[in-house]
Length: 233
Image (cartoon, rainbow, N blue to C red; front, side, top):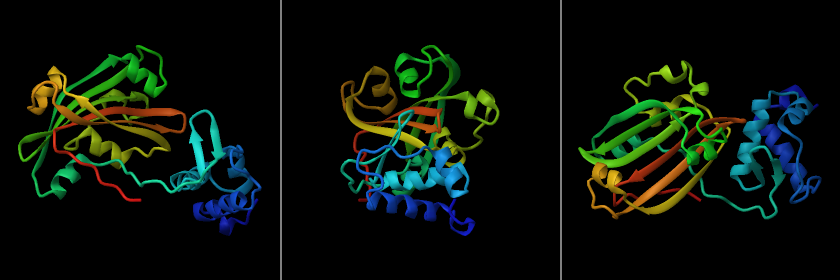
């Protein structure tokens, strides 16, 4: 084990990166699992997880759920993305924000949601449908599936004055996730909610987050025309 004074996540990250740089672990090699590394470094598994997440964000390793962590074949710099809080996005543009929860119910997981979250088709999940507004105009329609098992009070968890989006960002730490960006034509329901013509082009994000092997949420956000995303390299 490394000395206790050096087992913070930054020190663990530095040691792991050093092993990659010295080709102890070559491109494509699997590296030990979090539990074994935590034992070696005399630290909590969460500390190793934090170090690996930082290395993954830098493009040095590739992490796959249930497949472990490998040294990246071609290390690259990656764009930095954070999970946006829609209220903050709207207010940053000088506009007023509000949201309306359209529905909230325990439902059998749709096939696509089940596949994204890695649960059995038809598993009971909490489904939330929310409309977000900027200066009173529709800004984004959110269709979210939540795993009740991760919530403090299960499906009965109340988010208070916060949207589910903001509550989850504030309260639910995640270890990994994925996000996809697409252009999609508005269906009849989305068109009506967002106040656009059916078939109008929408910017859509689909995001799934996990805590270790436990699914947290899968969400689809359809934004009204004119939305743009900004990130850093």
